[in-house]
Image 1 (cartoon, rainbow, N blue to C red):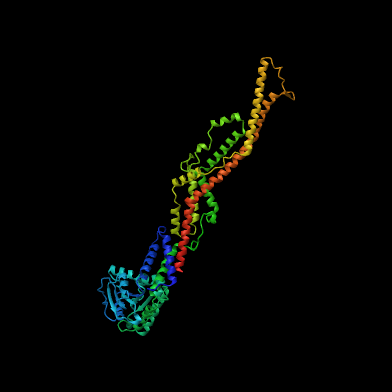
Image 2: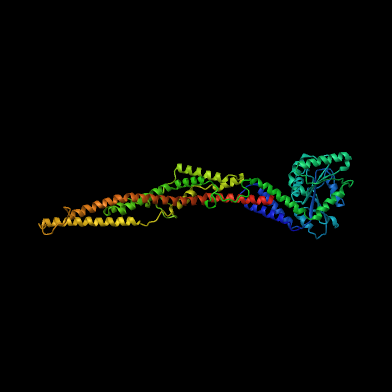
Length: 538
């Protein structure tokens, strides 16, 4: 077969892309049917440019008589009861080396008759199919198989059963998308007078038009008398000479398959390439829904517990640095709140308490809301795929959240300059008080030995200097600790807020990786699928 036109090539590429995207995601029979169309296209393109025309019809329609008339000899035995075994007959116009045998092997048609080359019909492979209404199931299955493979289908009707619902509902109406590769022949026209023939043809034409087959030609023939055979042979010769029947049949098959796949592409989803739930790309899931998810995951991961521990730890450390140095050792009597949580190692579990029933319920609700928002506008099959993607096990999500929280940097360990200064000043005041205390002890010793008059005692405003040093050092240290306490608390709250932001960013990362990104991938794949389907069906 000739290389198909660009349109068919583009459609096949698009249909193949749609099938690849749907593979493993969409559990739909239409995907299997599209895969069969692609397999047929690949095989048919490799089998030459012969035109396969099949005559199909009911018992008694004169189909075999018409086949013999076109073949020029009695190849197929006509009769009310066909003595066939469900195997089609073939007549081939062309040279023995034209590749028709390989084509018939692919069609699994063993009974073959070769005609001498005829210029007008060179390249024609004419098939006589079993009766579609045969009492034998294998006959009907053979008809269905070959109807899906041939390039041109000629449906042979007779005046008595041309409106038979079985043939129209089962075969003709479903082939509305293949109107260009379908012909309808009203055989045995010699049994009707001229007026009855015109009425019969008009009624048949109306039936076909209502079934979407307005582009399908209707020919009146008589295989017994030869009336209309010239027109039929001319139509066959035209199609064979154009060498486009196979391409047109594949185009119709691809369009039909794409139309069936399009049921999984509502207008809202087709052609969309938006990234869902990703802030860097616009965040198509409503921001408040994602925020609710982050809040729910943060609570389940124990972020409030860690934030409170950061605040208490920062306050504890800051108070120790700016308080009385002699009391700093008392901090060791109480463990650091952060140390108790065993944070900082992504490989080991933290000591954070597990999420309670309330936190788990809120998390499940938030996940469901995000999933529903992401599924908005998708066809049912893609919504089902998105739901499966969003089904992350609770244990897996809890482990991911724990690792994220445990590995988050909670803040800098750098000591603020003002705390260093306050701590240094506290030591200076302590030394001052100690100097005063030692001075007083020395005076007590001198008094014991009655030597207190030997060493003069300095005074400030009437107060002994040693006493002033002791009292001033202790009082100033206490005042400094009191003044520093609000500043320490302020820094502790800032550190807690900064830690909360970092922890929530880590939780958001888990939400992105475990939930939002997989759902966004489903959205993107649905958009890619629908874009390919649109290209194939256009």
